[in-house]
Every structure is written in C-alpha cells, then in structure tokens.
Image (cartoon, helix red, strand yellow):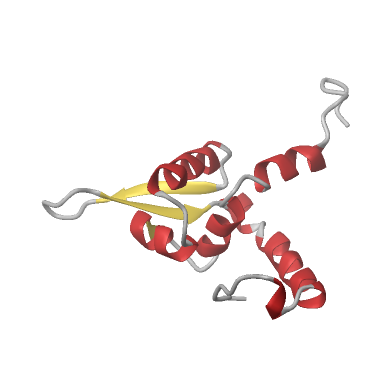
Length: 117
C-alpha cells in the first residue's frame, strides 16, 4: 500500500470498476478487435445506447479503451472503439471467469447467451 493513500485497496477499486453493469461485456466484445458503436451494441446485447455511451466514456477515462473517429466520406463520422494495452490485460480476467463458469455453472442454471470463449 502507498503511504500517500494508506486505505487504498487495488482489489476493492478494481472490483468497483469491473462490477459496473456491462463493463466486462464491453471488454469481452472488444477483445476480438475494434468495433464501431452499433457493432459493439449488438455484440454486448441488451445495453441501451445511453448506458453504453456512459460506460464507454468511463472506460475511456480509465484508459482501458480508446475511441477514434473515422471519416465516413460525407456521412456522419463513425466512432470506433478498441482496447488499450491495459484493457487487453483484462483477457486474463475474462479467461478466469470463463474457467470458473465452465467448472461451476451448468447450461440449465442461466439464460442462454452465445459464447465466444
């Protein structure tokens, strides 16, 4: 622990960030590569646009994702999202959750959702 912040707990803080609804779904979807907003919304599934926008802005502020704008040649510019190196490091977290889920959860325990890993 840092002497400047003796009560800082990195595990507590990380759980606080990652437990926000849709955050790990967004990260998981971006592990496959960059996605535009609509493509990301479809990959995440079930998250409304306002909430997705809020989560993306928060993840960008935490330097877990990047946002760039693509010129669409006369159409509205397209926002494209990708993971930063810190965001890509969450692959290990996703893998650990997947491993735990395969060991401890069964198909009849939860609603179906397609699984990429």
